[in-house]
Length: 384
Image 1 (cartoon, rainbow, N blue to C red):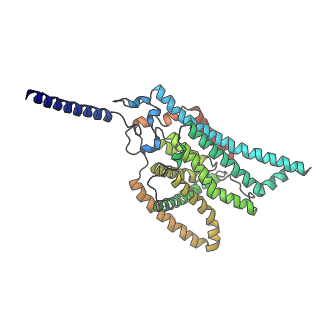
Image 2 (tube, rainbow, N blue to C red):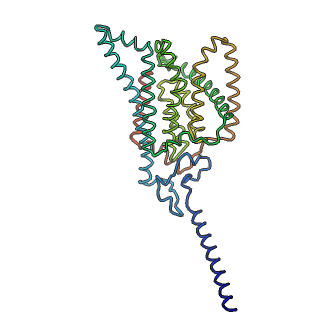
Image 3 (tube, rainbow, N blue to C red):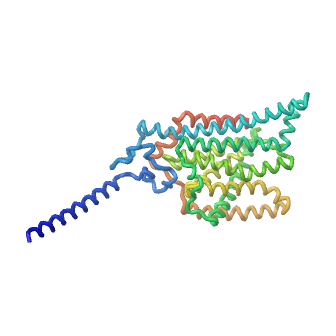
């Protein structure tokens, strides 16, 4: 009887020990911060930013809390991501321009050697008006956009499969996003017209893109159309929303949205396209975060570029009045869809700790600030 009693007591004690161990383990687990959302920000998309323990390894310890101000080691690791983005922006800018000039120069030398005595300006005009220049431009931007995108992803340790691993996306949402983009396109056009009036009043122009004579041949026009409507949207999304947005989102998604939208806009180097690209860039970044993929942004980008290319031809066929009525109906539809979308899909907010890890750290990155300065100065020079 006593032996059975002791066995029962031992069994009860073992069960109690097991229960207490489970409770301690559960409490220990609950005290460890969420490494995918260490700032406890319910408005962000945690899957997009990645594991923050890469920046702050001590997050694996229980009771660890992120300080309001980043300490030196954390600040340096955050700055590295901004520097990677800045370095890739500079590389993309110089590569696209230098590669274009280098190829044009080589072709001019070859044509000149084959046609002795021909003036170099005549050769350049020939290159510009033929399909050669369109092909050179397309090649240069493909190499610079994709090359530095994948280089930046490697430096920032971003897996390439994250580019297209889409979440909760459908054909219906694609149509809605395209309608929203159409409204934003019209809105940016109105804003750009207003800015242009101000510049013209003071003797300046906002549109410095002289495309007269470029790709006027059938082949050249086809190349420019394919590049504008398909290749540019894909390669630009790989660079700006695929690499740059993820690189800048490690600590502050809101800052990343506006920073990438700014760089996307300023990279066009004229105010009308900056206005469109900046406004559109905010929306494209938002849906990229929401669906954890660049595919929705690629689809919308292709739609916008294709529509902007086709509108003049639609106007010729249908007439100005009917085209304007169609544009107005689609734009108003997009506005109402955007209103509904914004009611349930707010832009990520920023916590006090995140605000000290966004622009506050980015502006201490030399490469980031050089990238900002180069783009702004180059655009001002072109406008002035």
